[in-house]
Image (spheres, rainbow, N blue to C red):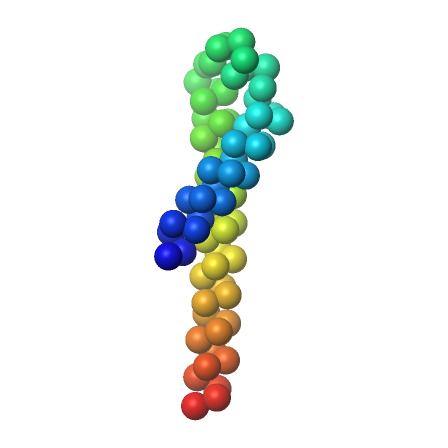
Length: 69
């Protein structure tokens, strides 16, 4: 479940950020290795942030649940 949610967040946020930060290269079709790496990182960062947040939340709830037992 975390994986799917993180992918959705990465696609949405990554696309918005890619358009904001790399619209000139995207519209002109002017891609080089640096642009491609930057665009990939634009998608990876939101994926990792969403995954980290979800895992930490799950850990927190698990710790709270174990305290209640």
